[in-house]
Image 1: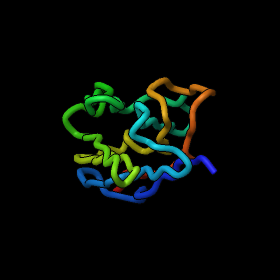
Image 2: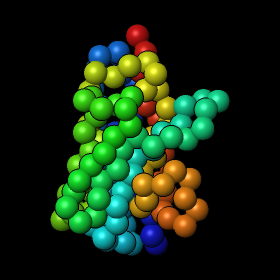
Image 3: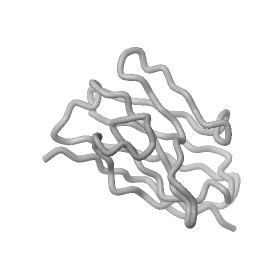
Length: 119
């Protein structure tokens, strides 16, 4: 079964950190560019970061640059998102997918993990 499973979300205070993980099964994640996306209540899903399949180049949304770091471990078939200096506006459900295009219907998406930043 081809699937992506996110984990690592939770409740954190402003200024805190979380590390999200995206585990793949049924596919070799290293063959794909992989994106992290998020969707806050009442808002559209947006791209957070993307990592290339070839050289591991990353890019980030302006709102998270300097705070979030995306990485991959192809041997473990995993992708990560280290989130530091979290803000309340980072609260959302976070998804990983085998694409860097938001809402691409032709790719594999995880079920999401909730991140809540609140004091």
